[in-house]
Every structure is written in structure tokens, then in C-alpha cells.
Image 1: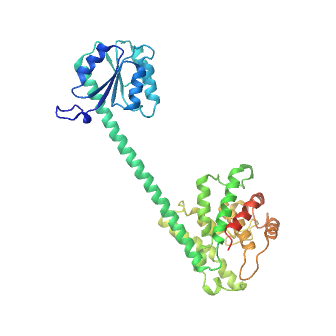
Image 2: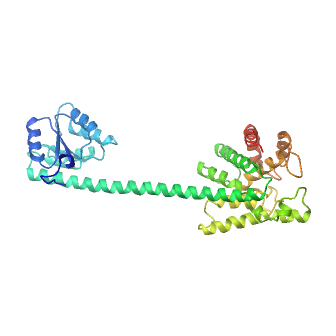
Image 3: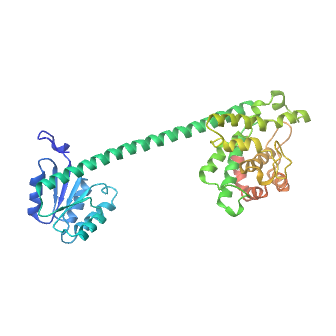
Amino acid sequence: MTSSPEASPSAMPVLLVVDDTPANLSLMAGLLNRDYQVRLANSGARALELVRRECPDLILLDVMMPEMDGYAVCRQLKADPRTRHVPVVFVTALCQPEDEARGFEAGAVDFIHKPISPPIVRARVRTHLQLKAWHDTLQARGDGLESELRQRLLDVERLRDTTLFVMVSLAEFRDEDTGNHVKRTQEYVRVLAEHIAAHPQARPGRAEPLDAGRIELLAKSAPLHDIGKVAIPDHILLKRGPLSTEEFAVMKGHTIHGWEILHRAAQRLGGEQTFLGYAMQIARHHHERWDGSGYPDGLAGTDIPLAARLMAVADVYDALISRRPYKEPFPHEDAMQRIAAASGTHFDPDIVRALQALEPRFLEIAATWRD
């Protein structure tokens, strides 16, 4: 850290010497100004003022000063995020262990005792500047790694969102009657989950806690509920009219097809505990019924994943209020009555109550994303 005679002043480390005795300031300046840029302050208040203008690399601080002693100055320096990293070395006539303990508690890194020894002063200054340089290097590397990590996490999130978007687009491309159904159901699921998270007493049985991250992932997964329809033959998927019993049996297979598509993708990404976990639950189980009469697995009650129970209410509500090739849209009031009547048989009663509490929001979403 010492500088050669040819080194420019701007390349030299900056030292701040604080002492209320002019002779001591002159002595320290004469001792150090060949190798460092030396700033002088004759009081604690003046030192803090100089530090606010220019942050030094090291501070040599007297303890016994009027108005504000060195301990108080050091505590203020360490309390300020802009200066807490600057090493403080006390230069003092105090030599009792309790004096040093108090100084270290205030945040100092070392003590130099008066009367000073020039070689010791130079050695201590050089050592602590080297330590600070290493610390700054490590800090810069750490900041760089943190920035790189944030960027990589952002890239992963973008990849996740792009993957979901491509899958949803594929499903929409096959089913021309989808319209804004996927967007509406996505928002229905989001507001239902937010309501449940905000009202823990109304949380459905055995439901996992819902934080903002889980809710966002639920909402992003909801549009994949019918991804399995890409495997349904066109003459069934695009039929303009009611399906026959045999055709409906084929159509019901979209739940398993969707789960298999997402399961294979999840395995490639490292297992089912990936961001596709909710999507897999929704795709397979959103046609299960609370009383166990649904498909494909005949699950009942809280054995049905919460994500799928939320999707069941959102999906059926939107199907009821939407025009389909085989039916005209039901008025909102009729849709609400039908869902209420199926509470406890088709739907989780807690989620039906959440829907009833959110009725104005559902109307708003339906109007915003009207086909």
C-alpha cells in the first residue's frame, strides 16, 4: 500500500488524522504525508464534516478531545452505512485494558499508544490499509457474484414464464373456443387464493399456507388446466354440439394427457418439485369432485389438491357464463346459484364461500376479459 515517489497524489490512500492538539497533527502529517494523502481535523465535529465530503481509507483518531471524544466519533462513523467500513485506529495516551475494550466496543480495529513510535505508526497504517484493500476486493467480488446470481435467477424465471406461455399457447391454438377463458380463470384462481391467504380462518382443510410466491405460481399454472386437450382428436375437440358417451370418455382423457405432458417436462427439469408442480395438480385433478364422483382418480374432499379445487370453481363458473357450441351463456346470478347448489358435492364449500365473498371481483374480471 505504500506509494513510490513517482506515484500521483490521487493514487495515494487517503488518511484522516483527528486530534485536538496542533503539534500532534503536525507530527502525524510529517510522518505520513510522503506516502499518503493526509487530511487533518482538530475536533470530532470537524472530522465528521470532512468524512461526509470525502470518505477516507483510514482514520487515526484521538480519544481525549473536548465536546466529542473519540469513542463518540467512532460510534457515529460505525452507525453510518457510508463510513462503517472505514477502519478506525485510536491514537491515545490511554493505555488501560478497559480503555482499549471500550474502543473495540465502539468499533475500532487497533490502538496506537502515545508517545508514538514512527515505525509502529507506519507499520500499523500499512497493515490496516492492506486489510481494507483485501476486504474491499472480497466485497466487490461478493457484490459481483450476487449480481450474477440475481441475473441468473431472473433468467430462470423468464425461462419458466416462457415455458408456461408456450404451453398455454399450444393449448389455445388447438381449441378455438377457448377465447379469453384461460385469462379469466387465471385471474379467478388468483383472487380466490389471495382471499384464502388473507382469511386463514377460512382456509380449506389441509391447505398449505399461501404466500405471494405460491399465489403467483398458482395463477401462472392455472392456464395449463386444459393442456391435455392437445392430445384429443380434432373431430371430438372441435365438435359443434354435445359429445356422445364414447366421445366424452375420450375427452375426459385430457386430464391424464395433460398430467403426462407436464410430468415428462418436470422430470426433465429435475423432478415434480419444480415450478410445474401446481400445473400438474391442476391439469390432472380439476375435474375431481368434492364427493368423490369426479375423474380421473375419484379423489374426494381434501385429498384433492387445493390448486385443483380452486381451479374447479373458477373453471365451472367461467364455463357457465360463457357461450359454447352446445349452449348459450348463463346469467351471472344463475351461475352463482348453480355453484352454491353444488357446494359440498361438486365443490369445496370453503372455496364456494370465497367465491361468494368475491362476487364483485368475479364480475369485474369477466367484464375485463370478455370474449
